Image (cartoon, each protein chain N blue to C red):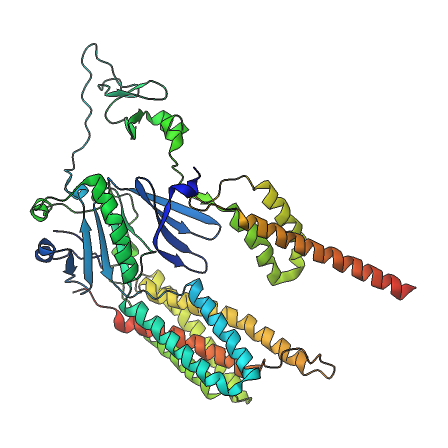
Length: 192
Length: 321
């Protein structure tokens, strides 16, 4: 059984896996705990769509191949290769790429910018060199308001980072305004 | 239903200073989230596609934000104790030793690596890094996958004898691992050994000259600083040439980060100390910034921790047979 060790990738000894779900790697000596699922046993068969016979519906993107379903969104016929399943529905590659129909309900994002984290880090990082806060304070407030409606993390639910960032940005802005007014007033008192 | 409502948090979370990782369970798939502070990357593993999950015991030395928070809290308590209860500092040192020992033991003995295999991917799950976390993770995930795929036949081992989990050589879409590209790379070289020894020596030297204000003490610090810098460069070169594996390279990076941070810490401490010595100094300025002794103590502690990690990398690594 060529199940590799999770540490060094050496194949684990089959005789140990037959009797249980644990095996000691012969390469690095690490004990491994293994969970195998039926998907491993599914035979690897290449998908070869059947050729379309005379009068049969053919795939929109592969005219010589027999259609096995129609797209739920646009109605195009799709072959076995082009059919993409979303639960009980079938979609064509074009609708999946466009995020239409059933594909729209499925989130396929592979990455996201966390604007709430950017908004929070901006005023905090600028404290390392405090004169920058004259810029980052108001910039944080504007940025947070501009990006408030943007999608958050796939797994994050609340916008508290935006709220804290706005509070810190307003605090920095307020501190600058106070500082400027204080020094102006003091210089006037010194002159008079 | 918001995106957040679709996912349930699974055990395990990796909290680094700049990177993080977590696992979430969706309605029909696992979601692996890798965080880079301002950006997240997602990978989905559908229950119907998962072929195998393998967990292997392996040392994992990782400083999380939680560990750093504990260290900062200890430092704050120590600084307060130095000023208010000097005789209680030995309790804090004992606590620090116990915490450090616990961290080393857990990282070395009760840590693991977890990999998940599908037909087109072979991914490591970084958030599953402790044995108890892996146990909870498997207990939660296995039934869900079995619910979708069904049970394994009794003779699965014979049926799967010729099958290998993960992508085949033709269909592999992941770039080759660096260890595959450089099979002769070693976990530690002579330069790495000297580097770790220098860390220990630096820690010892800082402790020996803790309260010394002589020129020799300053030159000692300069010597070890330059030595560590030169050795770090050598380690980077060895890593780039494929002679050294990643763990020691990361230790070298950690040393550079520590040197940079200590530079600013030292400047701040000297500033406070100099300000406190001014004739008209405000006495509310904290006077427990002892200047050289404090920075040397912190430097010794940091070098000690890095030296322990380096020793762990060298002595706890098991060579493949």
